[in-house]
Image (cartoon, rainbow, N blue to C red; front, side, top):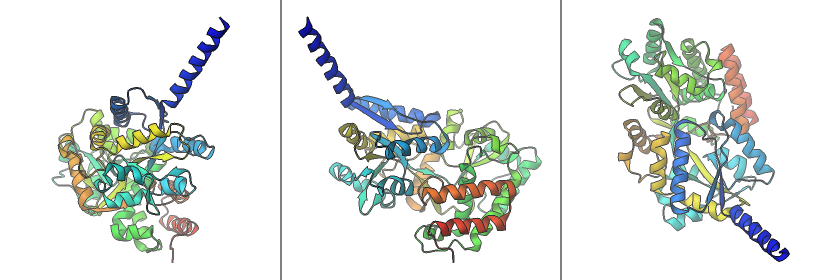
Amino acid sequence: MKRFVIVLAVIIFSFSIFAAENALEIFSWWTGGGEEEGLLALFDLFHKYYPDVEIINAAVAGGAGTNAKAVLKTRMLGGNPPDSFQVHAGMELTDTYVIPGLMEPITWILKDMGVLDKFPKDLIDIVSYKGEVYSIPVNVHRANVVFYNKKIAKEIGMTKEPTTWAEFLMYLDKAQKLGYTGIALGDKNKWTSLHLFESIMLSELGPEKYNKLWKGEASFNDPAIKNALAIMKDVLKYVNSDHSALTWQDATRLVFEGKAFANMMGDWAEGYLKTLGWKPGVDFGWFALPGTQNAFMLVSDTFGLPKNAPHRENAIKWLKLLATVEAQDIFNPIKGSIPARIDADKSKYDIYLQWSMKDFSTKTICPSIIHGSAAPESFATALMDAINIFVTEQNVDKTFKEILWIADDNGYVTD
């Protein structure tokens, strides 16, 4: 009997080891709407090929990943990494995790699969450091987009999308005079105000000079940045009074409910509007923020391989899956984003996403500040705080000086 108990204990212990070894912990902030549905679709696809692997969905809720990033950093620095985690392409990846030596290079995965050239070179450069790729881009979002209520657009006489600030502000004014909010804002979670400002800054600088800021080839001491603050001050005349109590979803919903004419947001808002039952091109329209028609402000979600991942082999299987057309074409139409691979099946994407795919392949790619691509976290956080104060105080001169201080503190050109 004693021998039987020992054998049984060994069997149970061995099974627990097998279960632990045959798991895959995926960390993300995809917890609602189309993003969660898309993630679960990826899990289903993974189980199609690896049915015996237990997926641990370690998603943490919070706008733009704010809460998740804090939890992830604590885990990574504490030596308790997940098997793979969502991270924005660019400085959020390299500055926070790659340079400190917390990630494995995964160039070899794309080379072994023969798909390295199936991703745009500009995007591969953003997820690389010193010639090595460190994460697999699963999608691409465009940040500099205005979504608008087509019924209200007809009421205010908008027969074509505005391409200048004068035109756009005119329509915001007309909407406000008819009793609507001109442009909805939800900055309860703070990042949305910088999201708006960085796109206005891109508009005034132009894509080439904007990109040079991050390479140290252009100065922040530029009248265009001060003018961007002045334009934002004009835009703020037309936002909803309760903006500080709302999330980005709440602000987008104001457009859906017919209370606001427009919302300037990344195109995850398109996915959200579809979950509410709206059809792109029928119920809502869109256009690039005035002055940014030739720019594609990129936000890309990627997944990498932490050093000492508990289930490294399963993590590699996950990353290989994400790099396939099959996975990207399952995930992105649900999420409301476009695939990172250039050979995806365009017929699977709606009219808005096809528009975005075309611009992604033809416009200048520009990195987002608040979404982790352009600058280190220290710069983005300080600038976000300055812009949130600006939303309240609307002091152009003071905020411009603060931007110069922040840029100088982070080693950017300011003279």
